Image (cartoon, rainbow, N blue to C red; front, side, top):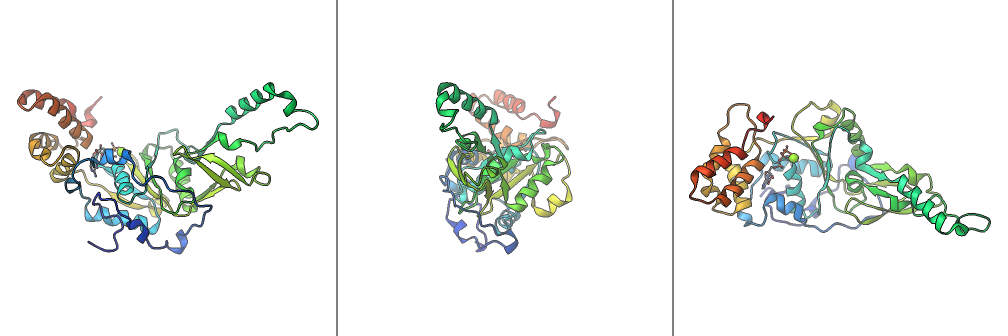
Length: 345
Ligand SMILES: Nc1ncnc2c1ncn2[C@@H]1O[C@H](COP(=O)(O)OP(=O)(O)OP(=O)(O)O)[C@@H](O)[C@H]1O
Ligand SMILES: [Mg+2]
């Protein structure tokens, strides 16, 4: 095993992340106070990876995949993962989080309306106003008039602020969090650059807290995991730079500045061996042999037809329920579930 590889793609959790050398000086961040780490293993990741089976059956990444994941970890750069639907782009973030014990993957699904602020934090000003009005109606003498304990604008504001997945990934943590920015190619034209700028700086401001920082230097807000974290001076700056996976189905070209600041990994469409490994990971050691015909059916595609590994896994699960003997039903079900994705209208 090559010693420099922190992520080895074995599916076996280990403490290798503690061997990750200091970042290059231009990617060194010093945020504080350090927040506590999430539970190292998360069931959302084990479910996706099919890790209930024997580890020997796991899907193994290719050397290029391993090297580029490790390059992103060492250089503290986002990893842009492209490839056809269902080739394993999103699952890669889970594989890294699971093996390196980095906890729950912070997932940020992108749609055309998504803006940077959605990923950083949300401030529910309306709920806060309603709560203040309710409190005033309930106890008017305590809120208004001379000698009253009128609530200052900063009181309780933290209860109405919730960090998004990107905001949480940038909290000052001792170990990197894993952030999956899923389907970035669906975004509006400005988001990739805005995101890259935020990741370049490794920090962001919450103006609602910055404004009151002289009177309320520390405010507790909610993070994306549902826990409470302290924000100092209305700014959040990372410490261990998160492992960021940006995925794209290649529906559009990205701007050059984005490509320059990312490590780019192109995942190939899984071949027979890799599909068999996925099937073994999810259904057990004998499953690939038993389902050889369905795997072949999945692979028999005309040029340009797209299918996703999810379809194969669904088809295998369902045909198992339909019984071993009834080959006709099995074939028909598999065919119905594995329709080419780019022909569904
Ligand atoms: N390393 C792996 N081990 C086990 N199963 C895997 C692995 N990678 C992918 N799979 C299986 O393949 C399926 C498709 O993978 P995934 O959702 O990551 O693809 P994707 O490239 O993100 O697809 P899309 O572009 O549609 O979002 C997953 O449901 C997962 O169960
Ligand atoms: Mg995906």
